[in-house]
Length: 353
Image (cartoon, rainbow, N blue to C red; front, side, top):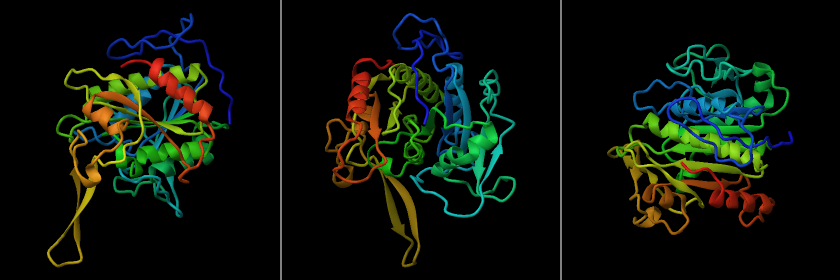
């Protein structure tokens, strides 16, 4: 894996809507703090970005836009179809096809025009031949594994692993028990499993939880670029664990509050419900919603004061939590120094929304 040499910090403006200054230190005037970095982006919402609800990949294009504006060389390899809830699932046989998308969503065509890879976007389907409208999709973890195990070399000419993997921006937060199901988080776990640093981004929807405003994605993406710049500058991009970054709803004009270092909550925010169809063998699957203030009972009860769900949904903060691939209960953290340094950075030095 590559060694990371932090460039001088920058105070910069991101291209696009609004001015976005990087929260870095030093005297450099470089407006592209991620210059020289190669970043792979994936998600679990697909690369389609065609739904009116903005739930099928629009966040990915906002993330791509922000990273390219900050100077990164970006390649996207994402699921062909929506794969929400796939967790760390993988496909164990058959053929995958990584098909380049040539007609990008309106407004995003030239975001990465000056970068070596030009922000190439690939959708990955399970097909021995071209992906079609109805092709089955690779999982989020599939796309990252493909990219790191030959896909980026074949498609982008990258002979070494990328410096960073970013997943998202997901349509909806990934907090509490939902983290176990999240394909966005699962794709980030697939990256650190291959010793590549990774961050997983997820944004809240509006009050209806059915529409995902572009404003939320854009604010999160621009914050994310500054966050990555700060981590890079301080040499804090690590593959020992991934970072999960969730962003509150800012579409009503209420700004996000400062980032908080959290744990994954031990309660649920949403849960799966199953209702039998009469006396048949069939059950309807539905998602139930728990109270956002953690006041629910049973699986909806939240017992941790530093839970991501509480600080995100109830208090309106950006939340950041470390996620490890090692599921062995009680395993000592083998990167305690890095963990402590990143926690200090989030609490005292990280950019503010």
